[in-house]
Length: 382
Image 1 (cartoon, rainbow, N blue to C red):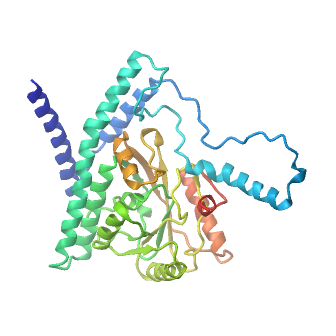
Image 2 (image 1 turned 180 degrees about the vertical axis):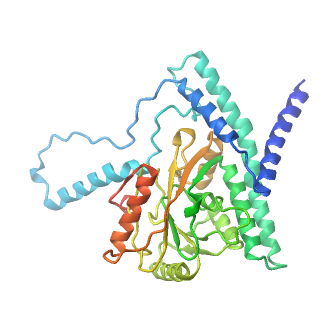
Image 3 (image 1 turned 60 degrees about the horizontal axis):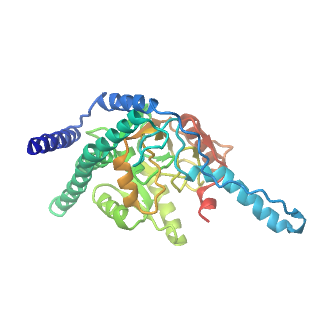
């Protein structure tokens, strides 16, 4: 009896894994099935009482002491801290949700017996069905791209072959994260030459945006990002084998200038270069201030707006270690992204870099249905 159950369980996991791999390799998809699945999950979540909205920001303590003893410098410092806490603080907490996510490991105390049973059934489904399949897909993505990289030692891959390998790798990787993405307005997809700019939740945004490249394309993106160690560093090393890439050492100012010059050089003749002008990941509640450097004259800018639905799983990377983020993501119901390709923009005659960057920031914020922030993430991480 037990062996029969284990055999059936293993067969289901294996079927789900191989079916997904098959669809990805041949440029196919599960069609409407993921969206039906999300609809069922949302119905289940709707059966539970709405949680009281939590304010993750630190509450200001009432201070009865007189302000007369404080210097103007101290008052200015406190004012700046207040602005940072109120305007930037919410961007770096877990993403706010409008209904219970049921993504915890323990039930709430106020749930009845039926609700607890449903919760544990969902936990079992996430831990013993979704996670094993996703682990298999993650390992497959690494093995696949490593074998493809090894092949480059014996033969030169064409641009079309490299792009195909990159697309398959990114789709395998994104499937392991439970991505359900809707790519809208494909007629505005970034093209050569130019720069694709987007708001930013996680290092996985690179794979998520690259996964939207159609099969058969001869190019995807020139990938950029900050140099990392650990798992992300391994991924960056693998990416270098398959597509043009530029990595920035954030702490080195000389490297930053060289990085910018190379980005502009490539953007004006090739591309599209993929950049995240916020410079930091945030929880998608606001679009942080864009850095102005790449918003030069005669550079085609392709805005891309990302909007997540955190009720199925928060895509924002807030953990200290990326491995912790991977585990949490693979235990989510899904990571749901709505991605809009927006019309190409160029700098107007009356604009400088700062004005152009601000206009693109607001364009992306409007398309994503979120507000724009006047401050950058560097203030928060000071």
